[in-house]
Image 1: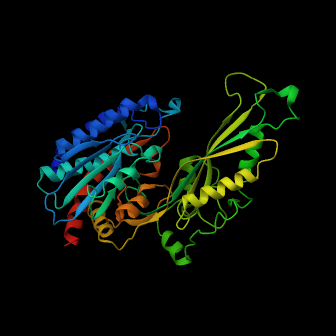
Image 2: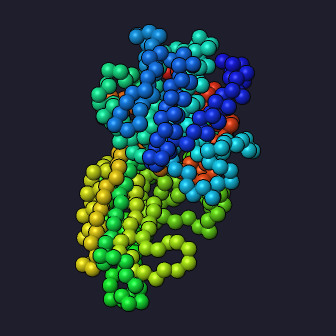
Image 3: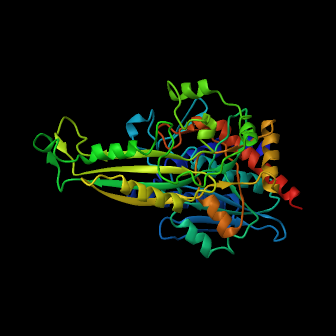
Length: 453
């Protein structure tokens, strides 16, 4: 199989570059036709690779690309999940090259979606092609590639509930995570959940002259900043009453096991150009980004932000706030507690509107399963070293949904790196990582089929 991979490396890369040129931004309606075009692209590549019954399954939003190859009903079935939509590329001026004109520089593919998740999703399509062309597919496979992950997968749950027979499988395989390094492979075994909110602070019924009214009328931006600042205490703990009530505390033994993962605080700060790190007291950086819940402002706006000066007290101010959750917290619980608290701390001089967006539940996947052991064996063979199990700070809400609706655990075989700048300008994905994924994934199928007998 490796000969086939090396012989087709340039084509595998060029196909990915072609897909990256399509701006499939699901959050912005102006890209609707591009999102649909990307779905067609993925479906056609699946057909070419050898998948049967490939279709675009309509939803209330963007379609889900489905395909399958059932070689023997008695063999196990792997359900591959990925997404073909991408984050907005704004701000464009911070990109070193246009986000939808991919370039390869210093061994990295630079483009929006290069890593998250077009590059990682497409590894599975090419790995499937490799197995098919070499008559080496050892079990059944199904593909479910959606186009709304970056906007909360609003329609995926309905699709899953209505298509349980179609999606019947033994395990779900996902590459939408990362690993510690190219010389330190790892497998993600835990994900944080998410509660995403938008808040609006409303003051006077119109923008006011800041000279005539300043000092007498509450400024919604000032108030909003004060309210946001109060959401953390001096120890960087979240002040929402009851926020930590259900948080699972790891034992010292579990924390010591986590500390085995290689991590350089100096390199971390250097990579981000930081004078120092910042976070909840009593926890180290790797713990703060994986086993502890967080609250962050993702955007804040209001008033005049154009060129020059305009002296106004704005009528309204807004912010988007996300909270990452850990096991035993639920998005419903935290959304309710945030809403109640944020409304309670607003002064009488303003009105507050809290609007929940999307949420997702935290999840921990077992490391003693056949699927995890097969993945670990595959990584060890291609990287020459055993992968380390790690918990990720990110969220993939559908992993918990797959467990509750389909009864299936997921194995998270990510090949991205922390330096890939996902969701940021200059997102990139290593050519090494892309090709290594295509090499490693078929070995997962091989060992999973063998160990499932």
